[in-house]
Image: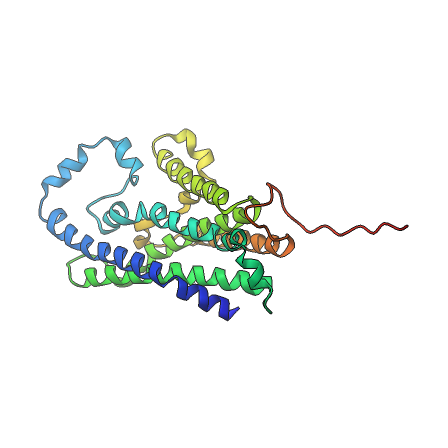
Length: 282
C-alpha cells in the first residue's frame, strides 16, 4: 500500500505546487487589500450597504464584510468549495475508474498487490494532496497576516481551513462512491459536479427564500462555516461531515472489492457484485 501511496503522491506534485502556491499568493495579498481599502476608505461601507439584502445574502449571508471573519469568508472561503471542489471531484472520480478504462489497472493488479492496498494507497495519496494544498495556502495566509495589522490570531486562521477540508472530503467521498456505481469516470464526474454546483446554489438561495430550508438540510454546504469559523468551529457539523465521508468511502471500498473490473467504460447503472457460477450436472 505504501508503494501505491508514494507513487500517486509523487505524481500529484505539480497539482500540489500549482494550486497551493497560487492560492497561497492570493491569500497573502488579501491582507494588503484589506489594509489598503477596507481600513482606510470608510466610504466603502456606504457602498456595500447600498446593495440589496438578497444579493448580499446570496454571496455570503448576513456577514460583516469589515470584520476579519466576514472579509475572509466573502473574499476567499465563500467560493473555495466550488474552486477546489471541482478539482477534488475530478481527481476522485478518476482515482480508480480512469486506470480501469485505460486498461492499466488490470496490469497493476496482476502484480502481488491486493485491491484493498491499491484502493487505500491511492485514496490516502489524494487526501494528503488536498491537505498539502491547504497547508501551503495557509502558509501564504500566515505570511500575509504577520505582515499586516489584522485583528486575528494565527490559531484562529486555522479553523476556516478545517471547515473547508471537511466539505472537500464529503464531495471527495461522494465522487468516489459514484465512480464505483456509474459506468464511466466521465458520468461520475458529471453527476458529482452537478451535486456540488446544486449544493452551492441551494445553500445560497436558501438565505433568500425560506421555502428552500427543507432541501437545504441535505446540502453539504449548509454545514460549511467558511470564514465564520474563526469565531469557533461547530463540532457537530464537523462530526457529521467527516462521519458521512468515512461512510461513503467505506461503501466505495466494499463495492470495489466486490465488483468485476470494467474496461473502456463497460458496465451499467447497478451495483456490480460478482455472481457465483452455477454448475449444471449432466
